[in-house]
Length: 68
Image 1 (tube, rainbow, N blue to C red):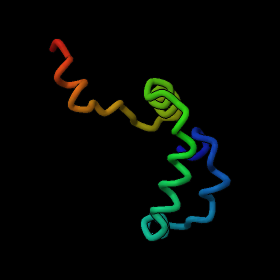
Image 2: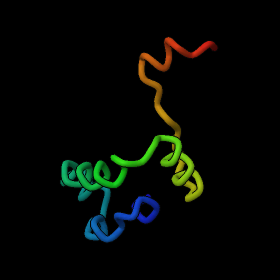
Image 3: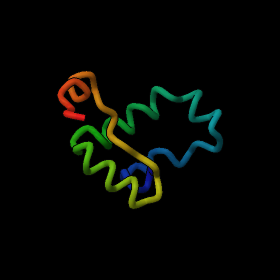
């Protein structure tokens, strides 16, 4: 995922999930910067192409406007 988002270099130092969890605020900041300017559709397409399961999460307004 980090490679797809172009932030692999910023996240290479983590050796375990525990390390990522411990530094989660910094990881969040890196991912937020990498995704802020991209649309949900673009992110879903890019992540799915990299075999990372991703879907757009609907907010309450999306749910109430969905004709389904």
